[in-house]
Length: 371
Image 1 (tube, helix red, strand yellow):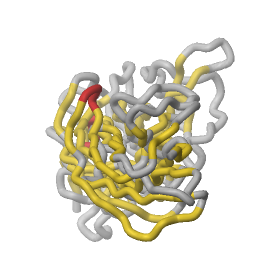
Image 2: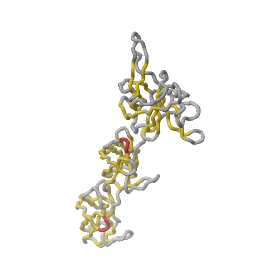
Image 3: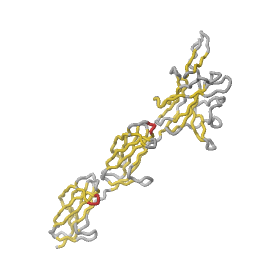
Image 4: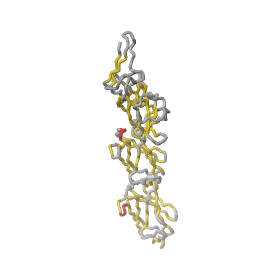
């Protein structure tokens, strides 16, 4: 019998007698090529390992690298360009009129990542092997094993390539307001929030990224960041994280689907706190025993702590009992609290005030007590 296979709108007929077995789909060689630079710096296509180089008579294929030496084909998803060539090695036709190439599928870890169609190549005069080819950017999705598969309109698999690897272009994390470059951004502990902006290539089609944090290698907060199309062919989104209240290094990383986000690290510093005794300078302070002293405590205006507490030391010995006040917005973008305390009487010779705001303390200058 005669078996015919429809490849697009072109019919390949394989003659056989009525008693012959079904010959099956036409046989074909599949070649996966990678766009590389030759020794002269010119772009050309070279076959990947495990690929059969297309027949030498496929002269219509342009940009072929000199020779047929295979190149390392670890593809970078969304960046590297491939060319897929199907050569019907055991079929001959006189011309390619009406021939439409087969469908191609990029299959990563068993899932179809990309589909397309190969275009029939022109033939010279006389019987030749038909072929089809197409150029594709490798999908920007991580795949431990990527295979290229071509199929007929009948859904018969025509040819499958050897396994290839794909690495994915990582996404980025930016911290608006933090300096860029080798110097670490420094933030004050327990003060405010930090904006976190995620960006991934737009061809990933992702809708959400997961941002995870570590403080001194201890897991911290995890948040979801919705992604929308942004200028520069990226999907981007911004959320806010509360700055940690303790630790020295804050690492912010995460992923979006199979795309990893390049982590960034922030240096954490103690908050800038202040406590002063009214009418005392930084270098000298003398108070009269039994009088009232006004104590001013300050913290950064965006502190995550709502109250301040103070205790005292007399002659370098801590005195039990703390007084607490709410922090209120005050001048210079600070949060402040004011306390009125009685200056101790002899036999005390020196007096000091210690303020506690969240996890941190700050001590005033030491005051000398006079009669």
